[in-house]
Length: 243
Image (cartoon, rainbow, N blue to C red; front, side, top):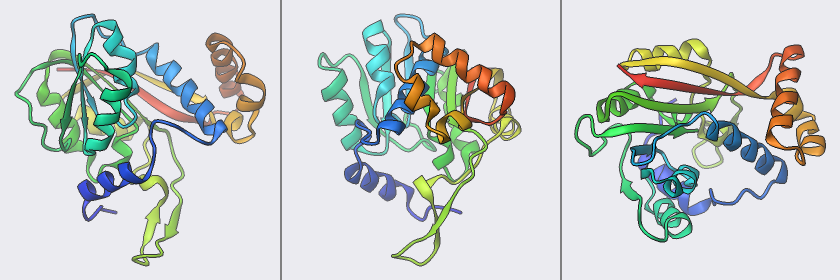
């Protein structure tokens, strides 16, 4: 499936939905755990210049600008970028660019690193976008990506166009091999892959009902132990380096 006008779609999407507040408490808790996990994997040195591809609710800017990392937030929606700056960057230390990930307005090799979280499942063709980020990174620049893992994409019949429409506009379901194909073919060397957030704990609400009060390390231990018995994780994260 191909979006007929992805730029218009995601700009409208940003106006209609609030990516800065999750109303559903179960989803909000899962989002909190996802960010806790990724913050422990994403490592940028102070003074680094990094690109956040598809910045959405701006948690990368929120977390790393106070650590003296210059975050260039890139999004199709100007409204998202304005909210990020107003909410998390009152001193204007970051940079904000409205751009398409298929055509980034930056010179070759300018960034020390980059991130992209919950973005690639929305792209018609992920490979050109991965190659474009690779172009903008310095040699040995780090790139961190997270996506849903082995997602069972549900389709609904759109009331407007009468065509099958995937929920949350997710166009791809990823596993380890598909991510290797995309990123190794785009000039990256994959250093690590991580699977996390056990589906059974999420779907039965065990994680929310019994684990939300736990410190991160305790929750993560239970998440790992659950995956020994039920090998169904919902998230996949990659740590990569530009060749």
